[in-house]
Length: 290
Image (tube, rainbow, N blue to C red; front, side, top):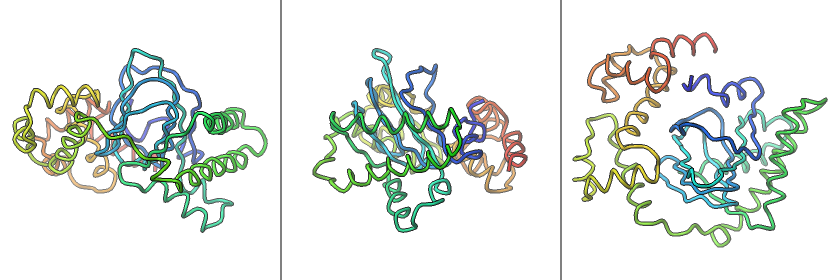
């Protein structure tokens, strides 16, 4: 099941406050648009990919790091042509706060508040140091030796301090490359969807609003994000539906109408198709686990 409450990330964050993977090279049959709890520090080591965070589109290269809030919709779109290797750590602010001075916590957590994510690009001579921090975190998480949580918190803090110091050299050392025309147009499409997803949205609507050919829109969006526009639109609505199911007691029909689904049946079918369970079951499971 791929719905929000039962992702490995959320299960680990609820249990330990941190979830880490170092030098991950496994390939998934699909790379869904998703959200999760906590914050994410993602590090790209090898491959070719685009990464979408909210309305931003990033061209990934070895040494690229992204920091963002897990509640923002995001998706990696890696190429199958080359091996894809990455490291990442998700954690809650509560995990980091224990034993770290308040003034330092505020500065470190602010790194994740940049809209669309904070991007850093590490030079080749800096990468071994960064990659070793991820490996140390995963080693401690797997072995669970005496004091491993304290060791992980100290390692995570050290990693974030390196990131913070690096970020202070922006924008000169971290100037982002100019996006391609296709990436700029995909960003415009994402902005339009995020502003209008609760109403009726068609390819013709997007084409007219952005003054772009709809066949061109479909091509570049799929090429860069890995999703069709319609597929992304549905997922955008469903991610919002999950939030409403968790935070309100509104009836399923009201949520369906609020998010632009034609009927409650259409909403329920779409929710189950993409999430693995019905909206009712999702809400029930969430209540039981909290």
